[in-house]
Image 1 (cartoon, rainbow, N blue to C red):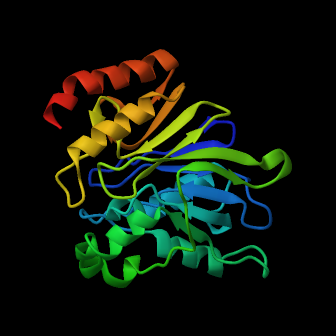
Image 2 (cartoon, rainbow, N blue to C red):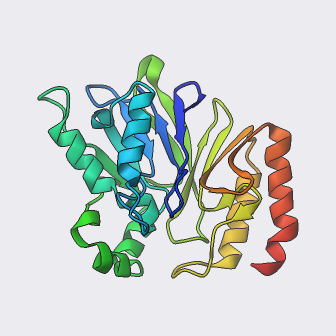
Length: 249
C-alpha cells in the first residue's frame, strides 16, 4: 500500500512470523529502479508463503519484484532476510531487459559478521535458502540513491541492541522513520536473542527519539498496529516506551 510519495509498505498479516517490508519505487537509474527494505521470509515456521504474498502485493501496486535493484537489510535475523537470494534470482531471471543485472544486497558490516558467527544457527537450519553475499556495506550517515528528480536522500542510523549492526532508515524529506526491530508501536525489539543488549537498545531508542519524525514505520506489527502518523503520536510512543520498558531493559 502507498504510504508517502513513492514509499510503499507491506505489513505482514499472516499468523506466523515475518517482517514488514518497505518499498521505494522508481529511485535507481536503469531497468531495476526499485529499492526494498527487508525481504522477509520465503516460507515461515507455519508454512505460509511470505515471499509469494509480498510479490503479489507489489504487483497489486503496479510494480514488479523483478525490477528491484537494491535490497537493504535492517539486520540479520532470518525473518528479515531469508528471501534475499530468492529475490536476487527473480531479478536475474525475470528482468525486463538483457542489460539488467541481479539486485544488489546492502547491510551493515557488523550485521554480516553476526550472520556468519552468532547467527550461524540459522545458516544450519535454512542452508542454501539464505546463502547470499552482500554487495556492499552501509554505514551510519547520509545515504543517497539515484539522480535528478528521482534522487532519494536517506539517513542511515546505526541502532544496535536488538542485534549487532542493526540499522534504521530516516527519510528527512518526509520526516519518516523506518525502525526495523528497535521500536514498534507501544513495544520494543527483543534482547534475549544472541547479540541482544538492553543497554544498547535503550541508547538506540534515545537516539531515534531525537529525530524529527512525523511517521514511524515498524518492522513488525503489534496489537496496536505497525505505523504511526503524526508527530504527537510518534513522540507519545517514544515516551510510553521509555516509561514502561526502560526499567526492564
